[in-house]
Image 1 (cartoon, rainbow, N blue to C red):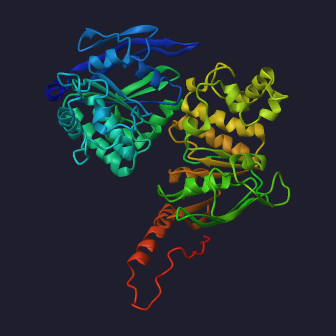
Image 2: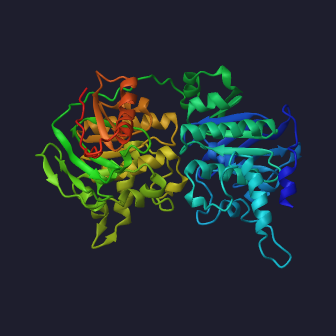
Length: 543
């Protein structure tokens, strides 16, 4: 009975080694892990960190039964542990919550929780009453008491979906829980809720592995930190003894400063001009300019309309109003008609999407195919792709951007997040686009890879391209941008020069549109007065 399994107490004490990893190594074409040894302790969070490609995911998959180690061994509660499948690991209480959620949106929360173990009646019918009872108990473990178990998962926000995934992995006797970038898509409030559940799990004696690139989260939640670099464990010790600077140095093997030198750049004439861009109330009368050689940031709160604005410029969505003008490689500024992404690319506009796995890449195909995707005219003859040309094109981009790979034939799915992002950028470098729109370009990649991406942006700007960078990380924008435009409630409420911006001023601009809209919506209206026009344009403020 799953009702009984859910109620079983956790085994082990807070000072017991739940799982021991000894000398683990893994080799594919080349070694990706070498001689890694560590212990997971009951009631403790171990922060597992390192650059993308350092071996974090490979080690997690070995522990979780998704792949076999080439060398080394493991023990679980003192007994030999060598799972051949994920089901083997889960049956022994070792669970993983992957970065990509493994849920079915058209099924209910209860059905997702017990998908492979639905309670049955005597004649084989699903016991709905018991299913709902078991689901409520599982949901209560992660603070989802207020949600009806019959709710479709697809109707939930991403934060609640993350909690459903965690709840599913806690059913039964969970001894080890691996959380891989669990907060990548969560709001601050949802992060707080997740951390509350982590504290509960620690109190129950669960050993947790927490993988994240957000150093402030690691310092907040973890007792110990294990740092991987190039497949080797270079440090393990108390988290509170590590400064952020020291942790970054361990991860990348070098010191990284607080400012980025993007090199000498010549800022030219206007290369991109957007005027009156509008789509419903999501993007409202937005106008701005970006000059050749300039990096223009777009900041704002989640839901402010930043991504929607990029999609309108790129033609992925149809605008209600607005124009786009482009000057290619120092030429005259002219209005372009962009009604689709194909139109945008033909006019020299490229979009590096925030969802590189879902919208930017064909993960099962090799690097060569992904790079040539936007450059078929350069590699095809009479409609047939010349594989030698395709491979040569990809190799040039691999070398130009220092993509860590075995070659153009390697599947993109086998690359780290940072290297996948470089493949997307390489596609548009080969196309020679003059305007590059970056939407959350460093989301989900490690510190070292971020600085590689910043370096690429600097190189592109030095070539005279115009860059527009959307980021939720305000510090990132302040680090790399020449100017920052702030979106709030669908409008661009301010454009700030580097010499004049402050973090407080940028944050105030991000909230200003919502405050103004609330004031208008709650303003008393005289009986014969005309209601205020909430869609009236506001003047942009230059700072």
